[in-house]
Length: 355
Length: 181
Image (cartoon, rainbow over all chains, first blue to last red; front, side):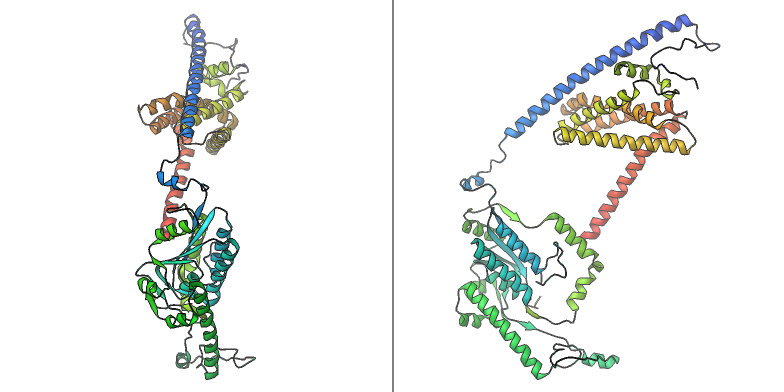
């Protein structure tokens, strides 16, 4: 391959190939062509510069128009002229059985994460009221009380109103949590109530005898294996557990009595474990009014001084939701939750098992 | 050397690209090509509000274009090298920069698109085809290969990229379905 050092120059030593066109006929064309190309390039560059200027002017003008345009002409927004634009009502969902999470992962929906969310949202300046969107049959005593105490602390520190909204079910522990709120709004057909405590344990003694399995227990005290599924419960154990149940029941009644401002005796009449519909709950004053989530948000807006139809701040973080979804899918493809639900480990629960 | 002169020489004597020494002014011309091409692309995208305004936004697009072309040039050079064809990867990268001047056409074409004379995406595709055609011509100048091989080598990274993109899309869809069900 022939070397070319001068990019724009012509090699003087170049020899015409045999049979090529004579030099005089080629020379004028090759001399005219570069000048033509240069001219065209300059014209194109000029046009490019012009079109760039025009385009930038158009973009600037469009941006200016977009910026000057009023963002929202919705008249309902004018109702809260005095309030800050950011003020909102926070909605915290409490769905499913309430239990302490198995880890401190922020995307888990355990009681400690819910309590943290309540504290965090109550601490935000722009949040003027909080709605707890409850759809839960309750859960373990400790987990339910963790949420309950977080609500009480948040209320005491921030004086912000809390509204509980019941969906399909809000019974037992779900109601315990709601008792801490200032107002309870339920659907007419919501299943609520079930004020009480339950401790249940399976007895596999007969089955284990059949299959020839025997469990050997070495214990430090006679009650150390209380609630064991491998043997019959003793009367002493039953008495002890009943005392625990009664104490937890008393705590439940006290919580409802304090929250609903009802005498404990009156609460006890309603708290035999029975369930109520939302409308029945309204009659016996376990519920303040009937309505849906929007009604609860409106009520929270009114109590928070934002008026009806306030801005809603949901606590759901899309990233955390995504991680939660992944986590639930990756934990044995959902088998973990099935295992958890049939686990023979007994616990003291504010739980309604009707669902 | 003046950029206009360098560009004019590339147009008139493209065979000089394969010379023993790198043509004078090729580096500056190629990089300016990337800059003005990206500016054209950026303005085109801004007219359709597809990218945010600002110098940072433009810098990101420029960086993306440079990175993509660096990848394309290296992939093509690797392909050529593996098939026993020798050439210069740096010249290929700079020559691709010269082909990017065609992206400047997108600025007036955006106005046509806004006037509903063809769709903006179609104009963009036409411009892309023009660039690919120019690149095939340039690859043929830089490497002694046939038109078919040059065409294959230029399309190869695009095809590879498209295959990876669609594979990722299909996998993401399947994964999302698995997550939801």
